[in-house]
Image (cartoon, rainbow, N blue to C red; front, top):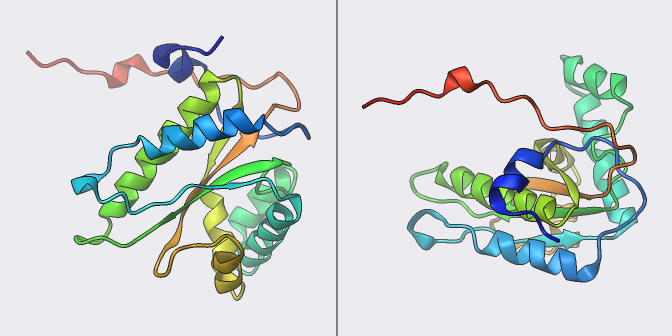
Length: 189
């Protein structure tokens, strides 16, 4: 039985180790539709929802992202990724890629991208599907294969990578949500 919204918010965590099991097609459809239900500034909806189950494409995106990160003059991020197992996508067999169009004022599309990503992540959690909102996917598009990947993923003209959400089932059951710091809440009356 799906979790209610508050339960899903409390249960969600960033899964960093996925099994080979792909979520059911019906669940992926529900998750994608939850993304489309996200509000957007001025109702522009300058995003798309691309569900990727093609393992080779996911592997190609990961390899290119790692290559691009390895080329940075400061190797701190690359060293961090290697220390955590050397994976950008943690063996996820499914991901949702969110390409975004540009807005005026510039940058407003980033807020919309965050909202749609959270809708997707919470919908997945409510259905018992682990997930990770993955900003590192942007590095897959940061090099010479940018246009190739946009074409393979059928980005609309003028759209750029926003975020990706990795989807699947945890390879181990050790993951848990972070502990909320309730001192960060203030009520002003």
